[in-house]
Amino acid sequence: MLKKLTDFVRGSQVWKSIFRHGPPTTARNRAMVMLANVFLHLHPVRARASGIRLSFTWCMGGLTFFLFLVETVTGILLMFYYRPVAASAFNDIVALREDVPLGIMREIHRWGAHAMVITVWLHMFRVFMTGSYKPPREFNWGIGVVLLVVTLLLSFTGYLLPWDQLAIWAVTVGTNMARAHPAIGHEGPGSNLLVIDDIQFVTSGDDIRYALLGGRFVGEGTLLRFYVLHCIAVPVIAMVLMAVHFWRVRKDGGISGPL
Amino acid sequence: MSSDPQQGPAPAVGPREVPAWPSPWPYDYAVEGKARTPAQKVERLVPPETRPPVTTTRRGLFGAAAAGWGAFAAAGGVGSLAVVRFLFPNVSFEPPQQFHTKAVGEFGAESVDETYKETHGVWMVNTGGKLMAISTVCTHLGCTPNWQAGDQKFKCPCHGSGYYINGVNFEGPTPRPLERFHLFVDPVTNQVVVDKTRKCQVEQGTCEVRDFYIPV
Image 1 (cartoon, rainbow over the protein chains, first blue to last red):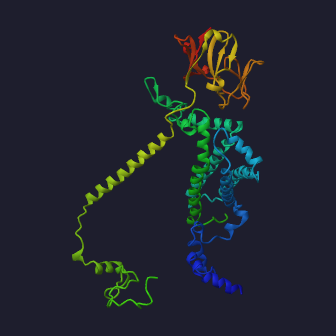
Image 2 (cartoon, rainbow over the protein chains, first blue to last red):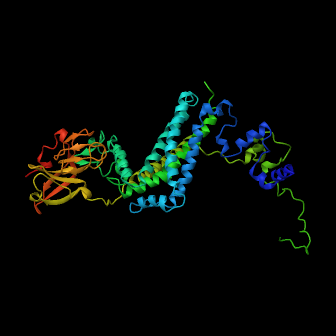
Image 3 (cartoon, rainbow over the protein chains, first blue to last red):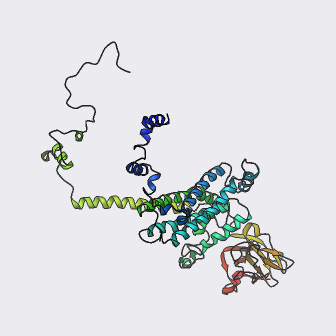
């Protein structure tokens, strides 16, 4: 009975139009499952039994990806209520807790972000301790380091959005680093060389910090810029780099073996 | 359906040389025997005598490639510059960097005037001998300290840095005194004008010029 049903489904044109290969009962078809699917083809066709041992990988890369998905889903839901305008941003954050069903949605997003930073560090630690950064995987280590920075940038840009005193001063302090950027920060080394007579070319009104904040201090423009960076720009960069990261695991010979 | 059952099948139009399906694309079926390689197919489909003569020169190809890639790179460069310029708005709604305050005599001796703290980030301080415009940005990490009149000191709530009334640090993690802005008396209105585009640093000795204080 069940066999007749599965045969009918597998024999239907709908099924065959989606899956261009037979059931994964042979080695060839099992490989085809991985190769013919746009999502699965980022993965290795085969994995070593040791490579999926929990005590070897800690599943920290997988957990990081899972947390990224959690952040994406909860983040999109939060965007339905949050307005990145100085007059309403803080009230919307309070409303997300008090006036919206499932008031823990923002807490999930927040704790997920903290957890993601931790799992990224632990993933890096595991890769280091198992020597998985060595050739031929050294390029993927580089991609991973950039992804670590992207994760921290996601946390940093999201930090401003509650628009309370903690957020504003934390971002004020954090972005003060941009003042000291060589040449393009107005207090950095080299910026005082870009002067003709007494006209300064790098000032507090046209340096890299101004471009980041949209002003000389953290204000209305900064809130909108950080919102766009947090919700669109940085996640898109993270997604592209993650695709490369996973695909390189496959291309560099799958998950590394135990030492 | 377009065919009418009353009329019967459409009349035959004679033997067809090219079937409608598989496609009429000539690679799909052999003209004479079986072509073994793609080169043989091309040879058979396009006889050498009918091929167009080669007119492209190596130099012409490189020239066209250089022009094409050059235009592509130039467009990319202009686009990148446009994106950078887009980050800087033409109009800023922040308070002007230079603003008028009050006449010199209106700042009482040994007092801190906090009128311009919220709007311009400046304390007007009369230390008893000098009138100076002190920046409200903590030199530790950039928070805004509070003036505590009882203790006669500026105290930063973030990490506890403390400054005397003249802006010189004496406690907490900050490494240097508060910065000071250029100020002068407007000869027309007789008001003190603060110019935030020029500032001095006490620890570098740049504040000892008349540009950065007014004797009172």
